[in-house]
Image 1 (cartoon, rainbow, N blue to C red):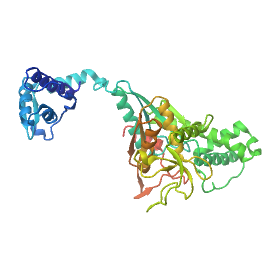
Image 2: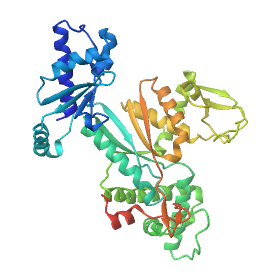
Image 3: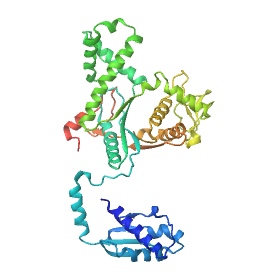
Image 4: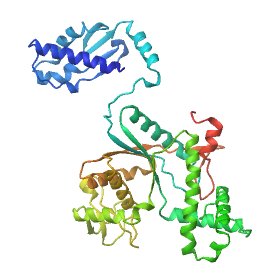
Length: 420
């Protein structure tokens, strides 16, 4: 039961009755009528803009039209007083018996109260958390996880067909660092003295069980292989172990996902990144060019060379964006374009990404890319969550898995509970 929707229907009925009586023109656009709380609580329980939005098409002054609508609304159920205020707003005061009746309906409906079919079963993809699979989730991930899950639940409650998605960043340098860190723990599990963890590797004890599992599965075999052979084996097993840990962390928050999508899968046959770039090139949205030198702060990925560029400025971005690095590998942005093209191909024309505020500079280019790969059919809404800052003894704690300095999500949940 939506009180505002109920009285919006009453307002529309009042205008329709005035039309039948010939007191206002027929065919007015009633979709713009809004019923909401009045700005000043002393003005009543509800307010409507009906006269303000209809007066021009009705050929009447807003206050004159408001007076006609108010006359009809005074006879509506549960209305005890109707006033015309300011330039033509209509304020309604409801009978004292109305609100207890609504409260009784709320109690009767229980958890189903407020559920609607507003979304019309339209598919919407909500991607959130997507923490790198290089260790347990830390307190910095909490806000985006809770916000994203709450948003997904509200959309589902409102009648959208929601897919909750986690993007596994299992490609790139950080997972190779994870593999080398796990390999060190593997050697340690075989009895080798490894000493202090070298700078640049992940020092956390959470990798000790990963090393032990590698030793149990492979024995001494990995030590006999060159890095080019053992790295992909260790990387895959380490990522799997991290995702088991991350799923458990999410479960501690009461959060689950419908889809865990692997970034690495995009570049496997068929190479979706290459296909996406080729399609954009064929449509003229990727070209070979040279970016002018940045003015002021340097632009990420800027290089003084001829390169493949996405025409993101055609879609509202500040500069065109590189897609291929000088070493021939794809930029992170290129992979993200292919990933969102994959979402479009799966039928999602409405997408929501929940990011940390430190990714704010990435918003325009990503929305530009979605417009391009969907030919304008899809929309991407990006919600930015402010970063969590934790202080210890008055000093900010820097969340760094490589430095081994972070407070895990599990520690926070164990101490204060998931609903804190």
